[in-house]
Image (cartoon, rainbow, N blue to C red; front, side, top):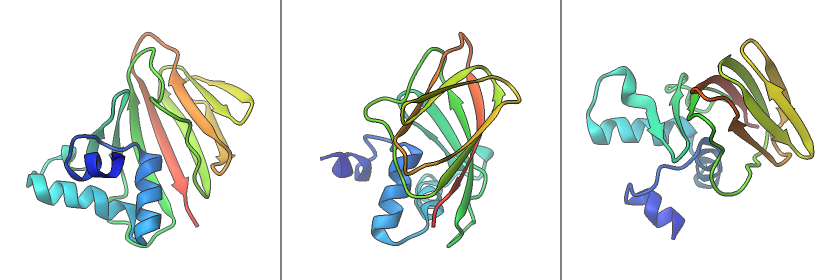
Length: 146
């Protein structure tokens, strides 16, 4: 049912789900973002932005076909967390906080990060994040997928 909702444009999947879908389909995740751009027909910087329930993400590497490294800007709403289950995907993840304060759970380890702080971890470990500040949190997230 979730896949059907994504196909119909009823749900915007989080980055981790995009990675899992692209891996299952054996395509580069940037293709899924580019298809949205072509469908909408925009030519602005919003071309590669997606909105989920708690955050917006923008790909910084839209043309990185068949590359292992993907970079995103993530904008997390105030006092909000990823909705649903925690995330887990093959590879590594690097988070750099540009603005705000976030809590990142990697397995059982809680990490509190503020502006200028960063975290690098094995993304095959269950992880989730939430914005613990009263303002929007802006992040730079780099994913490595094998």
